[in-house]
Image (cartoon, rainbow, N blue to C red; front, side, top):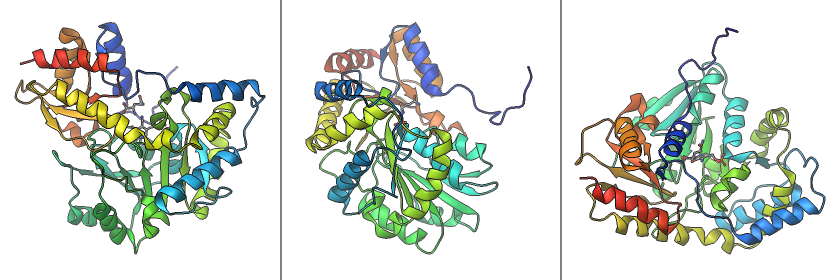
Length: 381
Ligand code: PMP
Ligand code: GLN
């Protein structure tokens, strides 16, 4: 049957493509972002208990109340902002669904949405699907800092939403308090919604703090903040996340959510509620991943790849321009085929596939795998 496409320019995404190639060549896989180690046995036990204790039917549409309440307490403790568990929190099928539902709820035909490039791949197709116009701003390495005059210049009467992501995938940069204050100041006199993707909120390095939009009152009043238990508890396959927003925004979000998924995996919500009650389960993540980052960097210190500093997330960008001038997709494919190492080419996240000869490596891996990857990287000259 023939049909027209609503997304004619979109193909299979990079993670699926590279993942398949990596499997085919049995490559050491530092491409897609997921841990190659098991979650805490305590969390698995809680999941097993929840399955056995009869939590196997629909959860409430917004998520279980106890999970929402626990999330509310956690945010208040960390960021000093109170979200009402009854009206201002929704449990979602990963952050991906929170993002999809947020954009589909608010973006209408010809609305403009500002997206900062490089950008994770799940924002733009949804904006397009709902008739919005993407207004991209390309940030440049090695620090990927925002030029606030450029930012101001693209805001106009049609701007409906701004999407930010800190800590940032793929660059590993984080936004400082001063970045957030600048953003707050610029958005202050507008009706622009901020979609704040904070899935790596607990993976911030070198003693820095995550600057959640929740910490800045005017930003919080216009923000939908998205989080993911997948990243925080090493369970990306559970696909459980959540978002928080002021009541008026959340009410609209839930109108769509209830017909999108209605509700999320019930037993996992039960397990996560219990597990979240011990703050060290998430507060320890910064140093856990900082150790991995440092381990990886030490192991590749004599390689010809240039390190672009990572301040958060479990991603490390490496610049290979001293090795070859080949396009990053070609070089990434070659690394898989000839050297059995998989990574993600950064151009896929950039505006007009801008190619700075950078690859993204995920270091959420065991030391054995990081050693294998480092050995390969060190031989490429
Ligand atoms: N945003 C960013 C920046 C991500 O890296 C990811 C995930 N991998 C997501 C959103 C989606 O998170 P989830 O797996 O919880 O849907
Ligand atoms: N967020 C993961 C990454 O950036 C990928 C998730 C996916 O495959 N969609 O690697």
